[in-house]
Image (cartoon, rainbow, N blue to C red):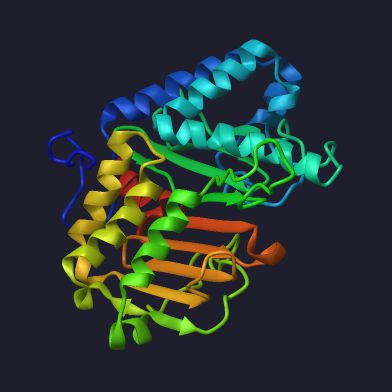
Length: 338
């Protein structure tokens, strides 16, 4: 179990406006960002260090494409090491390993599709918006195919880290490959299957929102706030073990972040009331067939879809609806500044 917010000295206001992490997180991020930017040449810095007002700051996506910033394949060894140091200011050990595994999976996808130039583990880019050394808000994003990590930093107030996107293609590496059976998001999927199998009677009926999978996540890029209505069954109808199953899913998603950030996020969810969370399922309850699940509340939205490519491609997003792109954090910052 992750440590409590109070024990870590975290600011988690009862109003739920923000879940600011310990001051050390913002200092670590600013230091790491400055160190990475200092290693870039002038040309790299022009594409890697953009204005806070840039329209690309909220322009996240998870498809393979060109992105603002400097890609790993364009970095020298010291620059790449500094980029991973920066990721280390955000992610837990498990989160860093998950990102490394995702990049390896992109290479595996290139082998399986005989298209390694397109499925390139080096096509993951880091970009900074605003001035990490100043007192005004700034942001950074590390992103590539099936991965998007967006972090907003408000000095003296904290950080916000959603939307977070992790995907997996293939969801399970096929038998013909040397890494057969590897599942990048297997723990998350197994936790959800264990939960849905435990549901019975009216509770199970209420949780099932569609006989067929939805086909993809709903709250994708540009649609982050599209899910306004809760669906499925509220946790108030779950028994203790089933509530624990939902918390296990939340802990897996939050647990990709360093402990200070994860603990504050989970404390915010608990503060909003676990009974107010809703769990929803669509599609088959059998592994290997198209399925979708959702955990949704005032301070947490998790979507997981495994439909495409014969139920062997996962799209998954974690959003804090109350702090999308850190907007509540920025409001607190600007109110304090003025």
